[in-house]
Structure formats: structure tokens, C-alpha cells
Length: 355
Image (cartoon, rainbow, N blue to C red; front, side, top):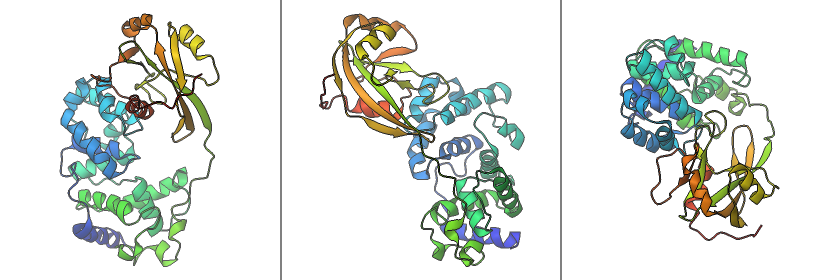
């Protein structure tokens, strides 16, 4: 298969069917960068409303750099994979301090920033500057693996290197931005993971997996691994003003930098734990219905416990990193998804189970 036949087919398809109305298209590097970070592990339809709100609040690298971490994560809340938001914020500060608030135009310099790998850097430069840079996101891996019957799971180093070689080989020298958008679109809308639409695919005539009736064999599957199960208790503690106690998580790890309810291990004496770790007594303790939250590497089972804190608890307002959260006048805080879910349910009747 020649380089011309692959890219020309793709560009012809893009001219007729490609997405040309995405809000970050035909933009400067900054909005393209924001969109590419948001699109990591997340679909376009989910990203668009978050992207629009984020760009409205942080329309430039400078305004992102001077914002507080809490406000940045507040605008990221619900999008998941919060390290992306933290890295975006940190990179903006570095760019303002070291690059005169201009995103680098060199691939290696761009990759040196937090949260920007080779594929993301290539996408930013090709889409915003029309630089000839190959990319290799999940959609592109699938298209190339099928068209060229590249065996193996793309997470393996040798398989990924083979895919990079093919991506580099078939990236054209002209219309690079259109080609980059086209191959991402093809993977997202036609050459999908399950039930690909081969009948309307522009690559059907040259796709080796289609010719051999082996579409579902490519790309190779990730070896299956059973997700570990973990359990935690989230304490929804209210003071006499009906405010709820939140604590800020450490900057790294699960929900890094976000605000969450105090957590403790199941099967402990909740009242003693609160006295020892929070410094106040609680009463009216009830257990809510447990639910699960799945991360990429384990499943967390959460049991909410509702309780009333005594009057002396109000004094913790002065102690960082925790605060009493007023739901009627909410602060701009980054909240973990289960926290937002439980906060929204606080005014609903609690299926009471006295502890």
C-alpha cells in the first residue's frame, strides 16, 4: 500500500464526512492543547460542554496560570482523570514563566511539559500549526492495526513502536491538520472498537483485516486482569448550620487535590474515629445505601454514613486542608465524582439504618 493511496483516501473521505464544526478546530495552539488533554480517555460528546466552560473561564494560558488549583479542578469536576487538569495547570505556569506565555512549537519542548506525551504533542502541532507530526491515540492505533494487520496489544512496547513507524510513514506532507483530524474521526465514527461500519469505510478496499475477515482480531486485546475490590466509608458530617465537612486530598494519587468527605475503614467505631481524628463528637449516625466507583486499576465500594457534628466542630473552619462546605453558597472547589453525587442527594430522604 502506498503512502499516497492511504492518505488520499482518508482526506477524500474527510472532505465529505469529517467533523469540521468542533469548537477547538481552526484555533490557536492553546485551545487545541486544552481539547487534546480533555480528549485523553474521554469521548468528544462528553468533552464539548466541559471544554466550552473551561475556555470561557480560562480563555488564555495566562489566565489559566494565575488561577487557583481549586478553581481549575472545579471546572474539571466530573470529567475524571484529574491528573490531566493538574498537569494542564502546572504546564500553564511553566509556559508563562519560561516561554513568554507561548506554547512551544518544537515537539521535544512540548513533550517536556507535564501531561503531554508524543501523540498529544503531535496532535497539537499538526492541528494548530499544520506541522507534519504523526499521532497515535487509541482511535489511530485501531485504524492502523486493522488496515495493516499489525498483531499484538498496542500497550506492548514493540507493537507500539511498529504502529509509530506506520503512522510516520503514512502522515502526508500536505494538509496535515486535515489528515490528523480525519484519522481520529475515522476511528471514532467508522472504525469503531465494536461493530465497525466497514461498508462505508473509505479504507475497505485496502484494509488487510477486512480482506481477511479478521476485523475483530485487530488491534490485539489487552490481557485480562481482574480488578481488585476495595471498600471505604465516606462520612457526611453536618454541623448546626447544615454545612458539610470536606477535606482536601493530597496533590497526588486518587482524586489528588480534590475535596472529599472524610474517609475511614469499614467496621470501625465511627464515633471514636471522629473524636480521635477530627477532634469532635458526633450523633444521629445513620448508614446510607452503598455504591461503587470504578477506577482504571480497582473498584471502590463506598458506604456513606450520615451524622451530626457537635457545636465545637465549627472551629475546624480554621484548619486546612478541611472546611465546612455551604451547599447554599458553594465555593468553587474541585469535587470528586462520588462527593458531588452524595451532595446532590443530601436533601433527599435517607434510607435510615441506625448504627
